[in-house]
Length: 421
Image (cartoon, rainbow, N blue to C red):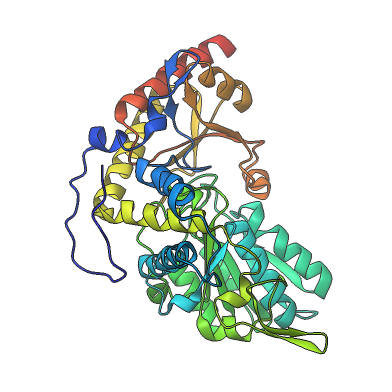
């Protein structure tokens, strides 16, 4: 489908009617065959597939625009710069940031979190300070803070989870105190799909004068994000989980905080003036964007935003909830199947175990039937340990998935279980 032209402002536009059969035509890889079977792609929590418009945007960039940005004195550089900065503005509008200068290009959520840890963290965290995370976190929102705490003599405190995998808010309240300097939590758990009460988490953190960082990698594809409403200090996400390419991501930060932070990487673009007597640094956002950026990735992320903006996002979310509800009901047909992260507010992730079956064996047998899921600890080993699990099987859904694909998943699970038990 050819997208309508979009400008750089939030304006009224025609909303495309959601029709899953039509939407699937936008994603060419969904016609791929695996072991002679049409692909059933249920690993969207790891990375989403890409619509034609995004793929064509990358192709168009290299065929007609390829040039470095900002400093070129020729037409191609001007075109690349315009598209590159327009994409930044699209991100700003997409998450309702206050200023385009608050949008920093990164390689993804992981780099965005490390940027904060190694700049704001090194500048502000000292011995005895406390950083609160949660047991639900992806390793990318654990390890950078561990490294910082080791360097600074600070203390890392994880919030417990309830038996069903929910964030234990009462435990969070107990952990907060006058030594808390940072609260860094995920918006949605990648491992089990639980949605954390981030507005409440942020509000309480602010009452203790703590800075907040939200890992939004799993949230941005599924929820409407408004960073001003959330009132978080930082929000990080990746392009590849929201229909854009790999290797591009975003760090949102409040302008006054970003301005106070030192640069992270040194090199071109992030400087204003360099001499052997000293260097002065560029203004936001370029102070944090050393070197040639992922230009085509940024442009394609803007196109992915255009793609999403065609739809009523609430309708997409409602459809995805229909899928997870259908899958949850189907789970009753599998003896010994236990859903991890059940009976709680969650998004389109079905994470489960089947008694007597190893998750990796199930994953391999589903793969032979053309069904792509994820198995293991999902880069959330502390969560798995807290729940007494070695890992789970995770089917993660997107609005291009169908109930027919879920039927194929459960037919495959029944076959696999019957062979393994």
